[in-house]
Image (cartoon, rainbow, N blue to C red; front, top):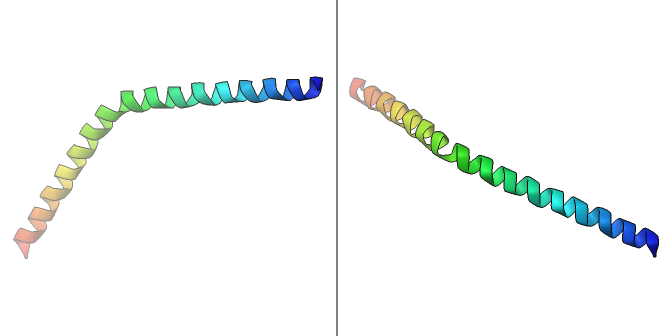
Length: 58
């Protein structure tokens, strides 16, 4: 019985760690989301401009 209780405590600790970890990941994502979107938009614009030049040459 003691062993089972000990295992349960370990599992609860692990679950707590996983929750903390996922919360940290969500926070990091929120912090990075805006810079990432801005960067992707810039890259997309560059790519689109490059394609426009290719079409003009043809």
